[in-house]
Image (cartoon, rainbow over all chains, first blue to last red; front, side, top):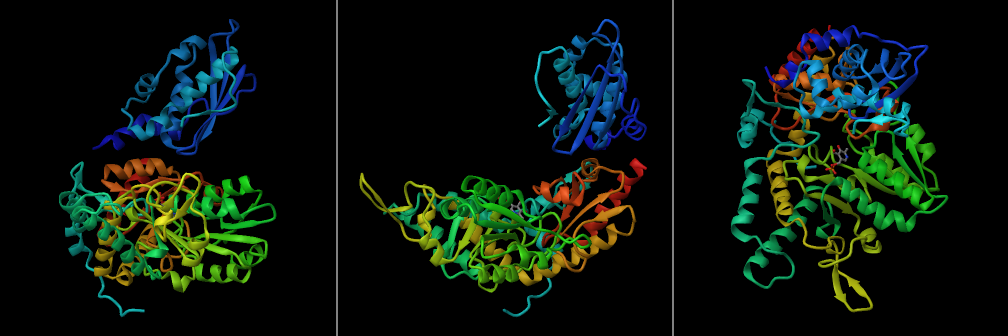
Length: 138
Length: 413
Ligand SMILES: Cc1ncc(COP(=O)(O)O)c(C=O)c1O
């Protein structure tokens, strides 16, 4: 089997069909939206911080799009809990691939890293490092 | 019209395309992305090799033997293409890089000079970005306005009643795709040209998806401009064609300046070369132009009417097979009245996921917006999958497509 099938391991299909932490957070400290124009994927991430104002307490998301993008968001939503905003910035593409448990074909990387990029941009905006309206992965 | 060609024998024609023998993951390639680009037959590859082995030289300006041979072949390639689409000689055939560049040539050379506030450009909702973005931006710069002929809800055809309302005496240009690359809809471009001409407007036909697979006659359509790409009709990349009526091309000013396109130059002024060279500034796409003429020979040897019937048969078969399951949405008109492509979505499987899984089965299709984002907004989907056929495709390959779709469906159910 080729790269494609590997990309659809059980874990990805499971997270796609039963996304974890799906929905809006009422009491979030920040939220951020991103889009991958290639697939038309969208992810909106909601983040609630602990009292120290830097450790992530809860994450949720809503979104629409291909299995890779939505499964990444679901996996990331569980992974981010307990990380500091600084640690979020240190994540890269390999971390996402590790989370998904697959090697990504070049065309699909953008789908996979969307949620991570949304988290990073959202965090950067929250601490005042960046001024952007919306994240895109193209 | 010429007499009907024999039905084509796809299995035999495949011999001309060794690339179709390639295997991935132990399965033979099923190439169904022909609306994006078609494969190149040995005859055309040989024409390219022959050019570089035997008579590679710059054209027009050389007195030496090689340059003469290259010049004659390059110029005659225009004659060959003219004949292929029923144009009135090489003067009406401008070689460009592709359809997109042909559209831009008209927009810059004609649109930028002729359009102004109060003028309208009428397009269709199913335009490819190559036409849509081009006129949208030229309209912005000139103060003209773009209007879009809507598609019908049920079969995604042009709403011709709306077209008659939208095309008025304010219309300066009607730009319409002949066969939609996303829907497969075949548009009545001759009728649109009629309406446009009644109001004194020009018509630009995007024939990127029609010239490759059916007889197209620019006189029958009465197109003022018509554009297509060599790489979608067995030719190489890097070559496209702008057909323009001689009178219009004579009146229009060129928009690219430089060598080859001039007759006489002084420090103060320049005089333009004759048609079509006036629009081909700089060293042109010599080899590609010659190879395009060979592609025309190749297609004519099969018969454009035979290719059209073959594609119609494949499209109808694919339409029927894909709609056997009621979780598949197929866009565009019914199976027996469409160009050789099928755009669709499978419920619950994103088009990109579908394309990835099909790739495991060595089935090459395209997924995305097919350079028609506004059309996809109208359809209410962000992406679609598209299988598109050509003269070498077979019903067996469509069965392989359907099996692979079944596999994707199971994975996601
Ligand atoms: C209908 C249509 N118009 C225009 C184009 C643009 O062709 P090219 O990219 O060769 O300029 C395409 C191909 O993608 C097409 O399908």
